[in-house]
Length: 291
Length: 255
Image 1: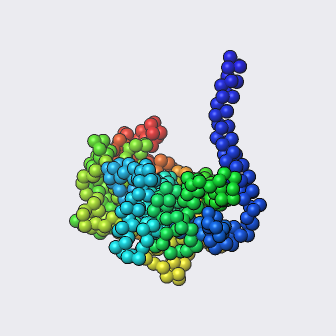
Image 2: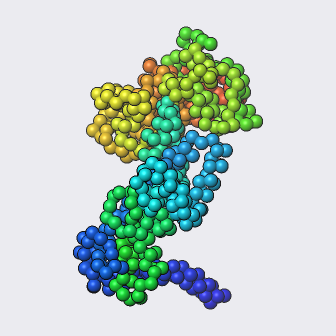
Image 3: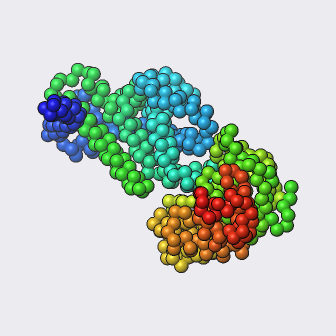
């Protein structure tokens, strides 16, 4: 009996171990391939070059050209997702009648369940033509359309995490505010949102992390032209798009061109890794606050 | 509708239901201005529900339904013409558990002014000092106004909540078991405060503690299973109750 229990424990432990192993495997490959890349291309060039053209004859390795694309689309997405996410969370938490809430929440969750390839297509075929009416000079591929659609996709992430945070604010604080004659709006934005700020910040960070790592929408709608720009109306390329482009192309395994995707990948990894750690840190402080 | 001159709150034939549950049965009461009235009775007797009718905190309960009239300042407070925010500025409330906002001590006291659009620094400072003094907390916190209110002790937090309520300048203060979460010393400070505040405010206090009711109140109402069994001068109610039910409760035969 004891041996049987031991075997079961080991089997279960092995399953958990697989995920750890996978993570370490990926990190190992990322680091070792990037290391080889940086032996051929200096980190200084990687950071200071203004263009990213490793697949052309005149090779340039300026990651900033890709990173700017990632940051631009992410920033546009955040401009959409953060305010709307919070407003929806406040509405659901404080204003919406129970029945409205019961219908609205599942609909919001559907937004999160739509495959990103569909969003990408929607951005390219619907949103961009519409934007053309407002900005006639806009290109067929652009950061604005991709960013806006990505923002809509991220709304449910922000709203549902923020709503959880608002819901966790003790009922006694709401009563205190209403008891002094505050309106719903005042109670929401002067008491509840500040009291839930840590949880809301966590939702923001996870949203940024999601936007930075998003691939399909930007690959379809934002273009494949690495460009160090803040202009949202022209084609750009994000880090993720570049990785897709090279992975699905025909670069020689083991060449510098091939290793660029690991250098790009590790840049992305460092970003999301830092963001996730910050959110973890904020969440831990949040817990202490209410203990 | 009008109140008699010296009456702050008047309830006429008030019935309250939660869904089909009849929680307050035909209550009639008149609470005099500048007096302290205590509501006592066993858990579930409806005393908290009743006090929460006076500032309409029951509005948040969907199944809540009220019949009869509650008249404050010559108006039936559930009337359509009443703005509930205005009512709650007139009828302040101190809750069972101290519930300061996770803000500084200063911002807690001036919250009621801020939501009314008052941002004049001098006015805010003066009000904060006056209300903290009135709540007998000033000397303990005057050097720490920018510290988080959550760092105060439970008793200090509750006095802060009283100061916060005073800042809105209500004429009536409702207290829902304000000392039940506090230690005996903090409790006696709150009780002293109540007797001082009586000069300027009408106070209705719900309490489980009969000694407390006897110490602080002028009149006491005894509630049992949704009925108001007896409403008398506190001294009379505790020494010479008219009803047997009251007698049994105050002598501790049930409760």
